[in-house]
Amino acid sequence: MSQFNAYHKNARISAQKVRLVADLVRGMFADEALDTLKYQPQRGARMLEKVIKSAVGNAQDPDQNSGRSHRIEELVITDVRVDGGPMFKRIQPRARGMAFMIKKRSSHIRVGLTHIENV
Image (tube, rainbow, N blue to C red):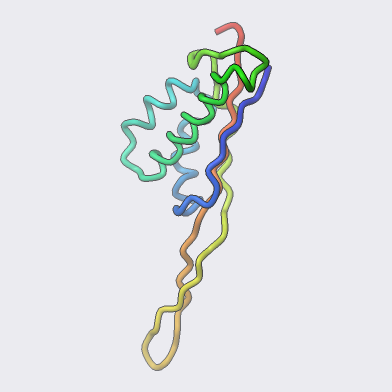
């Protein structure tokens, strides 16, 4: 069994928001996951959908797979990781001369697909 990966680094959305959507598709077939994400209203679903499409494209590229192309129906999402990325730190002025820190969070999204021979 071979593993096909795709990444989206420094995605401008917090990892906590994307993890909620990632838990929905973990363990699904790739075509089912894309259908599921299509009808999710979250912004993280659009980002995760693009990463899954990229991983499917990597699996279907014969140059990367020693001349073989895999069908989308035979690919299973085995690994979905959403890790925290770098933060932009901004300062918001508050009352009486104080300042609050605003953390604009980002995340790294990683999707791993595995080819299953007998579906």
